[in-house]
Length: 247
Picture (cartoon, one colour):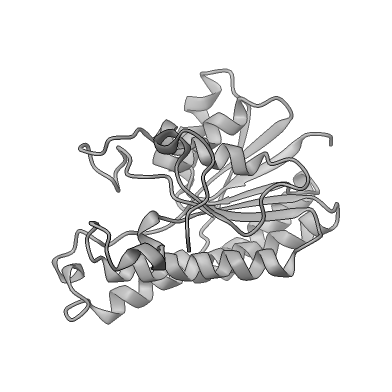
């Protein structure tokens, strides 16, 4: 097996699909699509096969220990390695009226969002990093948001969105800690903000397409040795290149 194996969570539609599609266009990268519902993933796989892109698929629910264990065992048996992990799967309850204020947010929603956007990322990362360590190579990309920048949060123009923002602050913290732990291992860990995109989550008024939002993920997923470690990037299309954001 000489190809790099790239796993993208939640990749049957939207940003995850765009990232999977762009990575599959790279020679030497075998993409593994994932989704909670098998039919969604198989449909996405078929769409890409119609573009002559070879991608694999396996069901994955990152909020389930059993699902992650089954997925990891399948990867080990099928490929024996993982080189790239893009943690894209997540939820955003910002459109709920209660999310307009920290004083009205439903604590159950806040907890559920944290479990999906932070704990689930820790779960799949714990499962797959040993496969990266075995070959001293890995690239981990965590999909965050500019709304999670603590230095900008007090003055930005975005919705308050406490559940979503706080979960992505947690994800950025996870990124920093993991990068620190893996320093010197040739496993590079970074997060990035894809920007406001025309997806189910972003809506039709967004200025960017999912393909544009995927550009920075592609850059971080294919970093050379000695590349960025433990940084938080903006979307490349808006700033004209890989620009690090302040935490």
